[in-house]
Image (tube, rainbow, N blue to C red; front, top):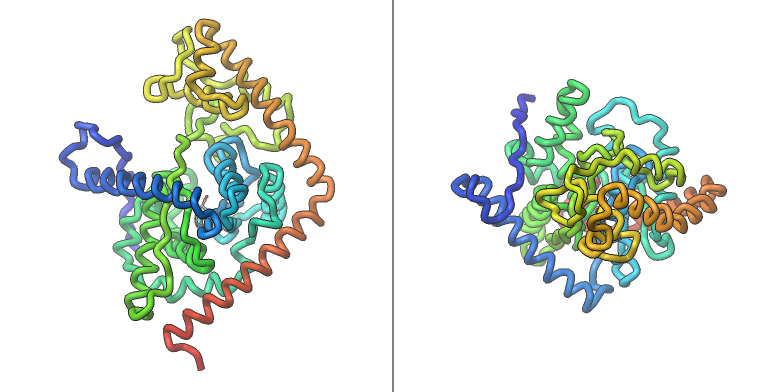
Length: 382
Ligand code: TRP
């Protein structure tokens, strides 16, 4: 397979003159603007009638979850769940082998992820948590879905390109077929349960577009009279990227993350190393002072205030004081989560086994039904 690997275009904010005449950028900005508008509408539709929506999202189980997950995704999942929206979470274990040969101790990692979910407030009585590999019918949907997209479309998917660059840089390896096709696999994740809302960051919009394409083409080809799949909408997560203490995006693989299961001591040490800047007076200016803004957002999340208010309260006391305030807020704020997690962990194999058994059984029932419908529509029932 000759796959061209190029660096993905960095999204430029609307009105950025530097890239004003680049057609691809302009297209990207227009798409983002449409998605933002649709997201805002969606938020109010959800608020009006939460029971009418099903959210599908999930995580690749490559390690225990960290502060970045909490702020960027877990908080909003819990908020949606508590508002009465049906939430389905996929622990995407097949995605672990998209870019590596060794999976490590997958059952242990999956257990940590489930514990993190529960500790953060995901309620398995209301929210379905399942693992990819335990739901055969979901995975079978991949075959008809793959026939609905072209190699060229997959090659142009910016996330696939970005992941390929990343895999090549980190481990000098070529892209696997599973990585190449994973947007379609994600389409199966979303469509198997007729998920209609997918919370994503702006960088994940191309994935959702792939799912919408699969749904639309399936309907055109096999269900023209009465569309079977709904094209899901992106719910753009408003929170910005959470940075690690080295100033880069927080991620386990960079070693710059604070895990939710970290101890108080580890938390204190983590923030002691956090980057700030040389300006003494603390202000909330995300564009020009990303490191300080990041600390302010993290602190505000736990102190129940806004980043701007927190900045004001620290002001002239400077970065040292800021770190102290943020550390205290995080230590205090994470305490209930950690206590819950510790209690659950004491009984982990049973608790997690239970949650997954229930989640997988439900996901299988739903996936079997969808696959039966799909086979009916495709005329492959014998
Ligand atoms: N790729 C996502 C991640 O790495 C996890 C995921 C798998 C997902 N399938 C999905 C997210 C479907 C949204 C919808 O975090």
